[in-house]
Image 1 (cartoon, one colour):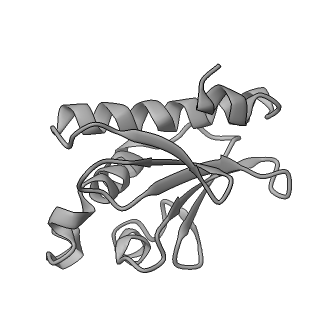
Image 2 (cartoon, rainbow, N blue to C red):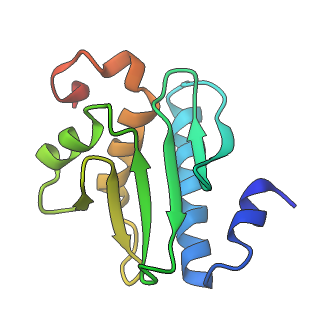
Image 3 (cartoon, rainbow, N blue to C red):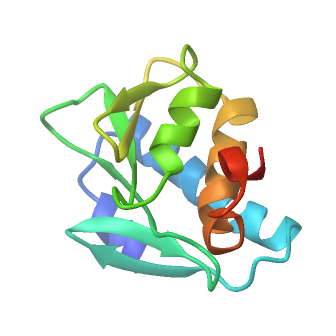
Amino acid sequence: MSLFEQKVANYPATAKAALEQLKALIFDISLTYGLGEVSENLKWGELSYGTPHSSPIRIDWKPKYPNHISIYFNCQTKLVDTFRELYPDDLEFHGNREIRLSLDNAIDTAVIVPCLLMALNYKNLKHQHLLGA
């Protein structure tokens, strides 16, 4: 059983499916843009993904917010501030590290893919205005 399967084994089916979609997007983006091999780990009890050029991306579902999943970013980066500027009405932000997605709606890949791409290539983009967006 993979790390992912172990982590989500007791999650609701909708949360499992949404997290699986996010994981697939991360791997697809890395492959499409030649960002290197994606590592999968647990950090702070959450699934964490990264490439050699990335800032870690963590994804999880929490019983406290049963109708949502979250994507977490390093709070020391400009990622969430940039996403907030680019997509103020498209995403639900919490603090300077979290995007919360409703399980009642399909993941808006037109918005999430650019965010994941910026995080996966963060070390190359961090000095550019709006992370090169």
